[in-house]
Image (cartoon, rainbow, N blue to C red):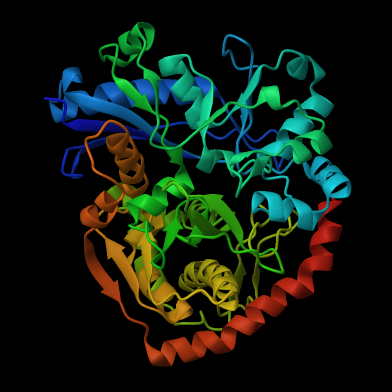
Length: 509
């Protein structure tokens, strides 16, 4: 009986392979990591061979661990990191490493697009600002700086789309991933000829557009042999990780908001129309649900900032974790609880990779502000959690300014494991935060639901609301909310005051 969906979630740090059954229940998961390559401080690349290798390894591990046979798979579906740029030739061979979402090398190209089309015009067409983080500027950079690569370009793909090609031989993408390229007409659901013409990019370079639930092909024999599967399994394109997370968090009808906390972090919700913010702080994805949109705000380095702190500062916590077998982040969280709300007057700016929402400043830098000799490592850790949370509040505030009604926030992603951070977010947001049972697998669940709908295993996207299970709820503490409300304007002013400094430091190589 074909009753399982195999979902691959190709993230920044690795690929998560999961199996969900006909009831939407998680049956098993496996993880295979890969590395980010940073040739320059603002560059970020990955080897597509590593992506495929991780998919192969995790597929085999998963089926072995779950004792599921290949003929029980109803479909294979995908979620993946967005805003990438992988040029491939006519037979699908990568022409260079994949330039991933965190890369900001295309500053000059983004400026050219702004000059030729205009910031507001691009925002109104695509639902997004012009930014070097999007695929258009990255592809323009390849054209301008790697002519040999560009001369052999046939298609530009995202990470999940390349894996889909390896499985089916088809050059396709879905609308949610397309909406993160600065090349897609959000409300028309097509590639934008106006922007492509201004960017001087041939529309033939772009993959074929599909809904997230579309079956785009069947698993080929060569791919099946590599994966340990059988040929002919239906392959559903799925969606970008943001859209998949929305479905996995139950945000498939208007209203409920969610906050994903991984390497990056975003707040989003489902809407019937895009939100066009006068300050362009908000951007809009195409939702997995046809005809729906997902207004969103994303910061660059959320869990990435906490990971940096672990690697560069929390050496004793690392050693303790090695000795005890505990999760190092839980040890860090306990250390942070030794501090107090406000971290004794210490602020952290979480701009270690520039910033997207709400500042859209690739030159932004991170920093601890207010350091004194009396501050402890506990204060540093707590200030880091609070600084990330304050920046997320700026995103939440942009939705509230647009008259969105957000009464509570569902937290998903690995960063939502820590109870202390969930409580900090409740106090900073001034709203309850909810923890579903599936945190790190929520994005995979969204991909699996798209796959299950595509082959008729699931009826429709209401499956998302049926599958989500809330197991913890954090209520805001009025006293701490009042303290954070006093600190928050200082956090905002600190960034504003340092913008000229960021510009000067950007020139120092």
